[in-house]
Image 1 (cartoon, helix red, strand yellow):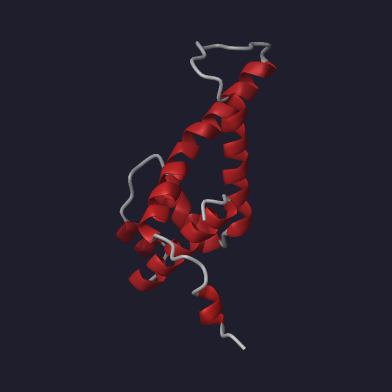
Image 2 (cartoon, rainbow, N blue to C red):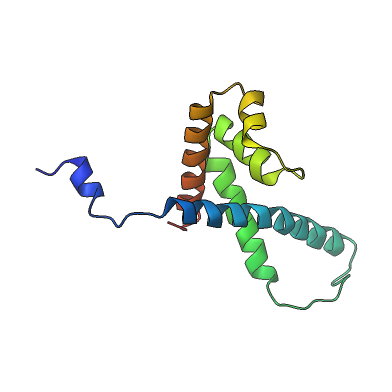
Length: 129
């Protein structure tokens, strides 16, 4: 019988740094995607098809990305993980990790463990890994 470790070792190792970078980039982009979806809805409610010049045909892709990121944030993270991601990546201001874990009353180790778990949950939900 194989152990869980042996089973996991059959999978190729994941570059944690690359995963963090990709997820962080997508979360930063999500802020703009979320606004774009809201703007489109507002324009449609006012009978306007295009208020601004349209330089690319990525509207459907952007809407799909926004929905899937929203779903990942809503259904894959616990309350603390969600707060960490919101403060770190979705806040309009730049926030240092130390400020977040102090505000949440977490130890440094607990904060980084939760942050790592959240990033990997998002990466899994979005099929990045």
